[in-house]
Length: 555
Image (cartoon, rainbow, N blue to C red; front, side, top):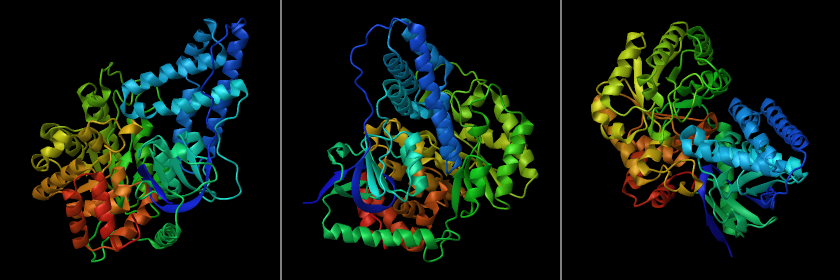
């Protein structure tokens, strides 16, 4: 008899296939025995760290996208962190064997990152994977690598490290199911970039046996054990539609009755912009952090101009929405000393860093303005983590003073969303960051997989707040877009359009399905689905009611 296991929808699509499980890493090291030769033990530990660092660097070089390469490069840097090594060598000097010293040092680092939260907190889970690899090398034990199989399979694991997820072969790995993780984890992000259906935070995933046949529904966030003929027929029907949509979906975003919804891409550098230019109507989120992270000093204005020009040129005369530096205590910069904080997720981050270092924002706006004048792109600029109309007005004034004609704000803080009507009078546009907005609305850290259900963009509180922002934008006569992960959900995209969202921006991999979903429905259909989501009692009911009313085989 068929059985459904619930999880969190992380990457769209539905497939059926046999399960292959990832070998779990060694976690029980037993009681430590005192080391007599600390120098030799330290040399062994350093060699193991170097091997793992080299592995990550090699995989970063061969990654299929810059986003994946950046993730793997960051892991390589973690493995070679000098402070981490100091902790490991110190533990060995105390008499701990290398495996125990490595495990203790990584655990301490993980706790520190979790306490920081935000962007840095998102990386805490990566340390487990690095530590497990180093320990496995030291013990000569099997590493928790992907199964070797010539036949396609559904991959089931407790969780996957970025280094492993980046090695997924879509021709062999049909789908991904993990017991931990969340919709904004590295596992989910990479799965979406590969077009592999994924369900994460499936608490009962450990019950699924190797070789067992399952259906993975990445649209609804469920795994079906022992699927019957009806399930398998539904899989085939939906898979055919998805294949056709990905192959045939091109051109501008619009509903079946020609209501235009420009579909934009989220990028972080010139390489990603060039790739996105092939299938998007512009850039809805240009993250500029890549220029500022992992360096000892602020990038010069000329260096910034050069980087921005390369991105703007990739889009020709299309729109590029640039987000100013989204950094602070949750994305610590060595050269930007903002001090320690008890709760960095609520601290000095985003636009708030200008309270401490206004020169950094001024320099960036100068560079953006110069780059805009040197290219044909339609450059819009927006500030992250804005809380009040006064903050918004001040930022817009600074941008306009530099000659940037379109200046807006990210809507991530509930306080700003609730005053959207007032803020709309002092800005040129809104861009809703649904990832952080969901986190702050539900008071749930998005790095904690156990809280994934609270971070679901289908939660009625999130949907209703988006409606209020759209209403405020309409009254103020300004456009409003969404650039969070929710925009890439083919079902939720319909709801967003029905709520009054002007544009949708997402990872390029999500564009074809969202475009196909819009073209299968009228603007009135979208309004009707928005009403269903608004009146639902919870996220599960909202998703289910919209899924039942669509004209396409999703959900």
